[in-house]
Image (cartoon, rainbow, N blue to C red; front, side, top):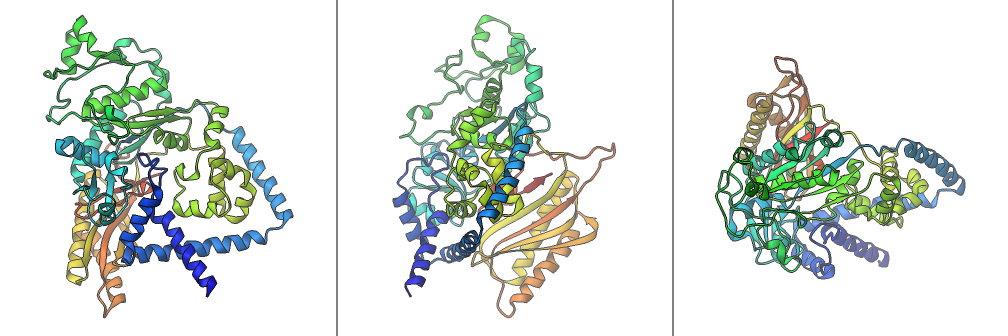
Amino acid sequence: MDSAKENNDSDKDGLLLRMGLNDNKAGMEGLDKEKINKIIMEATKGSKFYENELKKEKQVNQRIENMMQQKSQITTQQLWKAQLQVDKLAMELEQNRNLHCTIIHIDMDAFYAAVEMRDNPELRDKPIAVGSMSMLSTSNYHARRFGVRAAMPGFIAKRLCPQLTIVPPNFDKYREVSKEVREILADYDPNFMAMSLDEAYLNITKHLEERQNWPEDKRRYFVKRGNPTENDKPEMVISKAPELNETALAISPLLFEDSPVQPQQEKTEVPSQAHFEEQRNPQVLQNSVIFGTSAEEVVKEIRFRIEQKTSLTASAGIAPNTMLAKVCSDKNKPNGQYQIPPNREAIMDFIKDLPIRKVPGIGKVTEKMLKALGIITCSDLYQKRALLSLLFSETSWHSFLHISLGLGSTQLERDGERKSMSIERTFSEISKAEELYNLCQELCSDLAQDLQKEGLKGKTVTIKLKNVNFEVKTRASTVAAVVSTTEEIFAIAKELLKVEIDADYPRPLRLRLMGSSGKMQKTVNIIGKTKRPGLMTQNSASKKTKPNNSKYTIDSFFK
């Protein structure tokens, strides 16, 4: 009896890690974790969401128990042999360490919320989130001070912050803003890798080489006054909560304190860039800023241009590889940047005390399994590298070793071919077969439109279903010929859905989410070039769940 009670208590304690405050996220540092977690647990207890999370937690605890049993059986000789194997690989990795690339990670600050705040001035000083009572996509920095975050059910967020305003998402608008950002990024790396609507990786190594010979005029940008775009969008800078940074609430067209330009108090009409180019006079030059030739200056320039064009801010990380760049972009959020110098000593010093949860790819489940082994920081990963090689899959422990050495990709693997495109929609509950088929057809229609817009076709159609108990299923079917029309995709998806409906008969299939996706087949246009995807699109690696009432979401995966 005591053992069962202990296990139950352990499962509930684990729920705090799974559902509670992750204070490693930007804007959530220094909060009352115990108080916030208590509210979260009280708000969810007894709900289907709670029961599903408890079920997952029991599964994780079982995995940890199995892992610890396996650990207890490892002999000293096995550990010694593993140490030799891992150290040999570590030596090879060190010999091939690449410090010659300059990778940057651009991450828009609270993107969806920032767009809504920009377009509705009444929301600027309020805690807001974009999404629904079912699920949130993002929250602004005011809301984060209450523990409100992305991928949190809206009903929990309302308990944490009763004054929270939840704004329905408008993904068409977000894609348009993302397109504006993409146009700027392409100037620095035409082959940049978009990871989602609000983040991307760039390799600016070549740009930096070329930039060294650029005259000042080519690095000069003119400060626009008043409304920064032709669409009369209100001017704003994304801000932290007032108690964190009062000055961040001030409207400023500049991002940098050391800029030679002083902001004007009065708003004036915005001349075009061409006008400034024609009017080479001292007064005009006073309203300009010249950026340097270093990587840090390039990133300042990119962020400046983004704000001037969209009235939104971005944070950035600069490092020799993608893994470090991603971590760095979170370092000085919001509206900041951070650089790791391209030398091994600086990298290892940065990695040493870095919490494992800060590393992209290490989620709450992996974090809990590693913590069971006493691993909290990246240096712990290295110290227990031999043990990890015996307890985890080869892919996993190789990844851990790379992380512990501060290594990551220096190539942005993008050949222009999307591996898949998908659409999904969340709703309260649908159980009637006719309604399920109608929704499936709508999703297939949206997917077909996006495929045709990008000139793509697919061979594998997948449906994703989440029931009212939050259990997720995916079912796929691969066909001989490529498909792209609504009729072709729906014919396949309908059969997959029918199997699931029949499997639950005579009970209805009760769903709260449905998605449809297609695995891509490379298509070639008439001049023989692979068609490249245009918009920065949502990647599944970002783990952002799209909320209720959204038209649809797009996921894309790159090689």
